Image 1 (cartoon, rainbow over the protein chains, first blue to last red):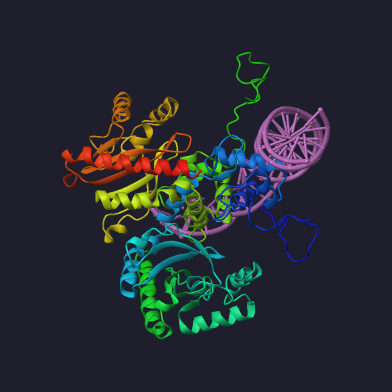
Image 2 (image 1 turned 90 degrees about the vertical axis):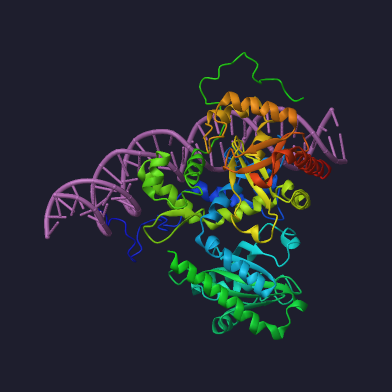
Length: 273
Length: 273
DNA sequence: CCTCCCGTTCCGCAGATCGGAACGTCCTCC
DNA sequence: GGAGGACGTTCCGATCTGCGGAACGGGAGG
């Protein structure tokens, strides 16, 4: 049988609505993820009601989802009737995930080399379609290693790694990101779609991205793209420091160093696969 | 307080058969987690068939689970017909989880202080019921920071943090862990349940745990327990180094330092909540 | 004491999820 | 070069899971 039965051909037919999407299948998983995504650095502990509000799910449904997530260790709950937090198992899995990224290993040496050569904080980040997720970081001084140890994921439109990655993404990806909104973090954040596209064009031409206080005032960063073995830009590396430690006239030279190291990682990735 | 109404009493009412478990509810989530848990540091990329074998799920079911996990970003797939790996979103969530643990923040200073004072590598780990999940690490030298940067989760029965935590868990937890098996990593690994229970008794008496090459030959560690604000041991901290850098006669003195720092973290946790 | 809000539990219906079976493809082995 | 096998993918109907409205219980506040 085979079926051409349904096919969507363009005729548009009956087909009431068979979500031809191909998108996702497990409805419940989508809900679960939506629940997990309510949590963030600023919302570390949420109550049932709060999660209901954010997800729009009915109370009993949410309660069941939460209970299930708790039972598998994805969430934790203080006491009986206490708010929920992300659980340890999630961290453990995330960590295994991290270690399974080739780039995390291949970039180790290069990241340190860049830190030493540039004398600034180094960030290595991957792109998840919307944000730049930092997967490695090196600070210029030892003591500096802990201040904000846990890695963060930064918006793509206002950081140097983010823009460096974004500049080489497909139109489709860029559109989707723009539609999701370009929140303003500082007066200098590029929140206009047109301006952002122009900026990305400049970055493509220039080969690297600059963030001049667009995410955090007074912080200047230089970022360059990293490609996987198929040539797609999937990550970026950057150096960042206070504006006064990174004068404008140094940028071209520093950028050369950053780009060089980014390319080195790209090559590592190509050679080892 | 609250009701003794039903509780377990022994009356045992009707209770026909409805799996009163209270365990988990979302069957699909349990399956999903089982799939995710197929991955580990050594199995970083798995094919559909491999996952079928490990989980025992039929092929079509597994395929659907994998596709769904991929669609939400919990898994990634190289090309079309390539093996699966844990995805970036999992890492991002795990990271948010990490940052939401009070202990991760409260222990930051103490961990560094211990590193400086003891001159050895420091591990801070939490307990997930079976393993000690390392959530923070500090190395004595700068350059040392990268060798095995990503944090690991270690078996509880053969590491100093693990044993330090395990010693103060309920019989129930210990039983469960023993039943899960005590794999032997080195000739010195304690894999006999009776011997392990004796060791734990010694640890309780002594106040700290020693791992003398039980996980990795030639590696010696000293670990002490950390309690949450309710007094439960939920984490541990340890120092570790090559046997020759940590002679037996130094152990008592070093242990005092470790225990002191562990207690300091315990107090931090109590004070800030 | 009454009220409101929140978390929890219950239960019957509906539709999501399951998995056997068939299909296509890429191997390897003969 | 053809047969056979291993693997991934798709389909579809029966079944059982997960849904969510409604009711319950308890705690805070008035």
